[in-house]
Image (tube, rainbow, N blue to C red; front, side, top):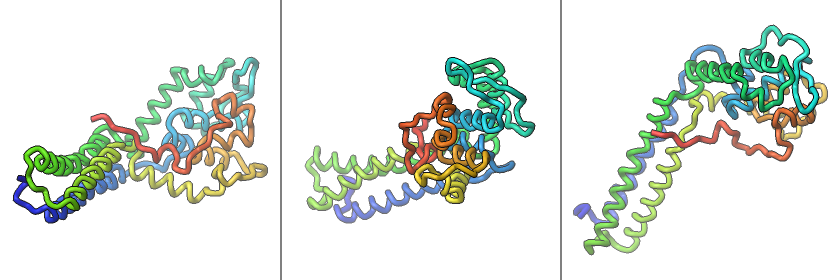
Length: 276
């Protein structure tokens, strides 16, 4: 049997093996994506790291609106009235180009130039280490494999003891092993949810949110007297809701849902299941 080891001793050895496998998975997750290069992300890049493409575009069009370049047109359209600010990010310039004629927000998001600017933005974030490459995400997923192997050993021992009527120890040992196997499998499944952002990006977002905690929607900040930079920073770090407080009609046109509430853990902190 699995294998000449008493029930209590096997449970102790199993727990040690789980701890080792868990250490491998967590250390891989901790170490992946810690190195970056280039300058720190600006508001557009931070918005993408927080909640991907739509938020990045919302921050971009909000920048144009705060610069007095975008106005609300007829039939729920947007249109530009002047050139973009000289220091505008490429995505902002692409949005500006898409709005040279009256356009709905959905048409802006579907504009080929905006899509190209988003692809270049993603490529730059991956190149600089803020977003994980597919290979890095696969590495993080495969680092969970030892957990499943250890769980399989425990399941095999339980199945053998049931099918072949072999002794797996006393009731307490069997129950402890069963619970340990279930916990190991659940932990492994949870850890296969791999974030798209690297460790450095998640750390940067946490730091920026602590520094700008007074801008979080949960604090209900007062926006009178605050500048455009603070508004864009708040949107990039906490989602688009601050735009509702400043310009509700415009916010509604660019897809900001007044009934949507943001969780304490923002979108970038929520990992997604990686495909191997």
